[in-house]
Length: 378
Image (cartoon, rainbow, N blue to C red):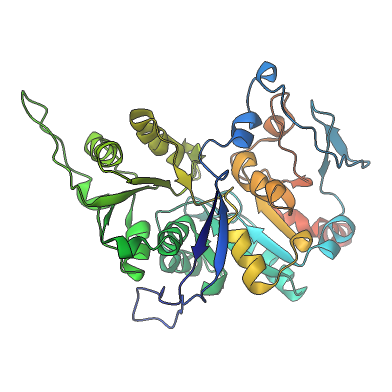
């Protein structure tokens, strides 16, 4: 079955003291039922070799002078001549944020100059993040704080995707409520479409009474539980979520993403939303509907509404099982950067079955030819 998602023009910026306009035209987006948490493709990415008998080797084997070969026999091309191999064939770049543009609250070196050069070449750019802790308005503020001049209409977050999904499924008309395991980003996006919700940060300090005869009472009018990254997740939230999903007829389990780790700081990797989703999945036995990458929601929007050609789009990210899978599953070019969670050893390991078109140390390498000339001249 196919689910359809509308992004409604009533979705506006919650801030009244800026000129940002987050209004989005009505359109239909296909969210395939295969875009669910722990999808077969994502599970295969790092499955033991003995368990991957059904893995299909990519048919488009690339050959290049500077390439490494994975266990599947696919050539992984390290980007060395972007002016010839990458830039001429790409009109649109879709960038992940964490691990590509910044790490935690630290901007990655060379990013402002690289984005400016891409704009000077006439390239279109969109920034699509699986991090749901902020709304689109919140991410606009983060870009601004880092000195990046990124228009609001180029920013998409999984918190926005969750709201768009609920809007398309006409959740508001059901009269039901949403219980949020997550942070303010989800709540702000739900406010914009008028969907009642509770939980989130407000439940961060709650501890259930587990003495004899005690129980957690839950609201029977909760029709969906949205699980996003939550730095204050606790047992109360997990218990409340499972009660809603297990005991409220038709209550839907929605995940903004299933990322294993994330960048809260630039010092180390931190457990990602996959850990929160996994806890709810473990006590409900239910698979969630995933609205973030690698779900096709955002790429369907960009292509259907803006008339973009998939073959001219390059997805750039630091994760194989979300960013690169998002590219390969949706007919896009893909480029993995090593500035985030994935190392070169992991990319070229015997277990990896997800192959990007290119990989590079960071997006600064998009102009490695130009940088090399500058160094030679100096």
